[in-house]
Length: 212
Image (cartoon, rainbow, N blue to C red; front, side, top):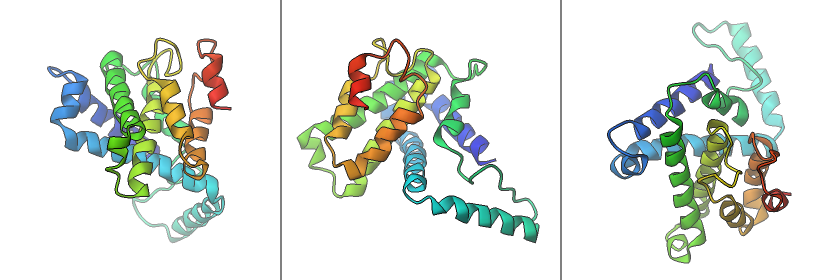
């Protein structure tokens, strides 16, 4: 299934970016091609979810596609679930399953928080922003930032919104809200509705207010 393939791809890349003997930050510096591939998956994931939210007819198109595949009985091709690409939370929740022992939590969250920090700094620093050649590059950076936040929130036991989080959530939300709403509303909704810990008691009222 698409969900399993996506989970396996994310897990494999995270394992490669957190395996000994290097620290996650060293992996990101040494293995930029892997980091870029990981970022591309997050970018596609968020962009597809935004597309579904703004074009509800896409679900009908996939339903028609599934019926067509079923009628034609194409061998070795299965389309299951509500969509070929399952919802964001459905794809990533298993990575945070308490029974999953393959990912070292500390190294994984270090990797994800570092990526979130890099994206935030690039978005909020005029010198770096000036290097973005087009709107799509800006959207790519924002989607990757939101993607690693959501993944961090699913992987870490207390999530991304707690005071002990390694991610500057206030800074990340602020940099999103400083962009045109047409570009970021879908990403803010992803933080609102596909994270696990936003409504936990450990989340400050200020962060909840920022996402209202």
